[in-house]
Length: 536
Image (cartoon, rainbow, N blue to C red):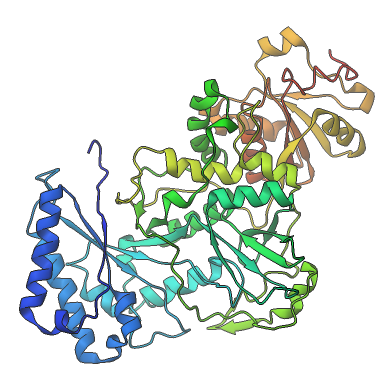
């Protein structure tokens, strides 16, 4: 395979391991089988999953069997390192080992911890940490609260003085590309439940129920509520560009890589959503969306394959109260706070942590776009980046250390979205701190004219946006607007090309809010078509 990408298929040891771990011949046979398969198929190694299975069988509670388990992993790693990859003679076969998060606030005998990392350092090339599935149908809540992820890393790497933090570069922090749709109220036919959803499921829910997306600040995830046909309330948690970006920043903070579970579970967009001639724009948009948030696109990711999202019991429990209210705002009473290890861990998905919500139109525009503009927004951009980046292998592996991810990560969410030209004009008149930002080149502005908003007591600000020079653009912006934290921008482009990217870019970099003007200056519903708006 071209470049530095490596293909490592996932191997799961599901059989009861008693004979495998106790008998030397069985171990040798299994190891030889794996190595031979890698050589025959030209793989660069494997992603091995066994620890969670062995934990479920209860064998890791026995110190002797636990030592045998570690011995098997070391033997396998040594055997693989003795063989060069068929794809390159310069690199031996690689072993990535999958490990789960602890299920209590302190490490138990069966948990994978700092001593195990140190013990397997030479034999294992990387550890894929499953930091997702924090919640389940019986304890509905976020997929992977950020504080829980941080607490898991603390337990795994140990203290600064006597831990193994120097091995953090071998950890691949798990990021889910699927979401969950949980039942959070009881009614006729409602007895709890729900479960995992993929990108296509999520988009269908957005279109059908027209919900309001909300940012939950404690878990740092997006969610929305909707009632189903039986008037039973659901809570949907699904990764967004914002939630992914803060988890990438967490990985950067620890100096580790990432593992995505899994690329194929992201948004599956029908080809009819986009006009054929705009497909190339869609392929480039995802990376630009990451760039707009201050992200340096990663060159590769580790990917573990599985058929369905796994469910691992977590030690931060949600209430199982039977008195769920069909009104989402009342749910905060059902989730009491808990404190673990000095950390206030999220145990309520609804309290004062909800930031300003996006409307359905904004959410959908930022997710799938429409057939006339080829828009793809915050959520779809992150998924599309992983799906369309040729260096990322579905069902395989490519190893990395995450580069600098965010130039600036804000403490709370800064709203950005899309507004129609008419709404933008109205809000420019209503809000004294709202300003119109024209990012078109001078030639385009001269051709069709610039918005004349002198009747509102304002004047549009023109700063040309060049994607290759974001720092220069932001510097010019800072010279024009002295109080960005109090300023809301309405961004005008020729069509929609860069306005959404700029809206997100400026909110990440300190502006109160920013909104791309739908269809720009010259689109079918843009500023020029709204003939009642004057032009200079």
